[in-house]
Image (spheres, rainbow, N blue to C red):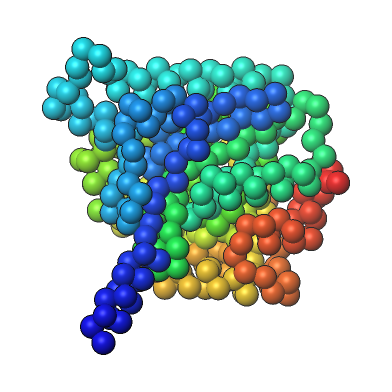
Amino acid sequence: MKKNILILLISLFIIGCATHNTPDTQQPNKVFSNKVEVFVDQSGIFYPNNWEENYGRPCKIYCKNKSYSLKQIAKKQTEEKQTEEKQIDLNNDLSSSTSSILNNIKKYLHDKKRIFILVHGYNNDVKESRENYKKIEDIIKFNSDDGIIEFYWDGLVGQVIGKLAVWNNACGYSQLAGILGLRQVLNQINNKEIFIISHSRGASVLLSSMSNPPFNKKFAKETKSFHGIDTVQPPLKNLNNNIHMILLAPAIGAIDFKNVNYSKGNNSFRDLGQQLKSIDYTINKKDWVLKKYLLGGKFNTTELGYKKEIGENILKSYLNIKMVAKNVSNRKHGHDFKKYIDDPEFIEILNSWKIQTK
C-alpha cells in the first residue's frame, strides 16, 4: 500500500513539473531573409548570444517557483562582484545585445509595408510555437514587401497538473514580455500596417505592449526587488502605425484593460494609445481552458474569450477602436492554437482586412 502511494506521489510530481520556455539555439534573435525570430525571457529581456554559457542552465525539474531571469543573474553578479578577468560583464552584455537586436529588427523592417507579428500563449515550448507559426505562415499569401516577426516569450511549460501550477506566474510573465519585449520591438516600426496575431495568454503580451497594465501588487514588488525591473515602463512611442490585433482564444479579462493603478482603487479603463485601431477576437463556450480559469482570481481571469458580454462592456470605453467578436462555439473545438488557426472564422478575419489566404 505504501509503495503504491509513493508511486502515485512520484507520478503526480513528474506530471506536475514545469520548465522555462527558452530558445532552442545559442544564437537566438536571428534575422532571416523572410522573417525575424525574437526571444525574451520571463522578464521580457532579450536573450543574447551564448546565453546558456554565460548565464547558466535554466531549471529543468519542477520550475514553478524557480526563476530564470537574465536580468536577475546579471544583477546578482554585480551585487556579489563576481566578474572575473575572463568573465564578461553580464549587464553590459544584455545592454549591448538588446541594442544590436533592436537595430537589426529596424533594418529588416525598414522597407516593409505590412508587418505580421505572431505571439503564442502560455504553456507552449519553442517547438510547438514554431509549428503553429508556420501553420499561419502557410495560410497567408504574403506580399514581397511584408515582414514577419515570430515572438517567443516564457509562458512556462507544464504537463497536466503542471499546466495549472504555472498559470499565475505565466500571467505576470506575459505582462513583462509586453511592456519590455514587444513594446521595444514596436518602437522600431513607423508608418506601417501592423497585424499582431496571438493565442491564449499571448493577448496579454499584446495589450501590455500598448500601455502599462495593472500588475498583481505582490508580483510587481518581487519583480522590482528580486529582478531589479520596474513594472512601470516608458510608454509606447506614437510612430504613426496602424495596429490591428487578432486574438485567438484570448485568455484575458476586463482587468487586463484596466488602469495601471487598479490595485490602488483606480477602476477605469486605461488609454491604449492612438495606434491601436482594431481588435478581432474569438468567443468559444466549448473552450474548457478559458472556462476553467474564470475562477482564477481578478488578476488572471479568461472571460473575454468565453463570455460575449465582457467584450461588449469593454467596447463602451474604447469607441475609437473597432472591436469585433467571432463566436466559434459551434465548432466544438478546444483551446489548442492549431484548432483556432484551422477555424474558418480565422480565415474570415484575415480576409476582412484584405489579407489574402491560400
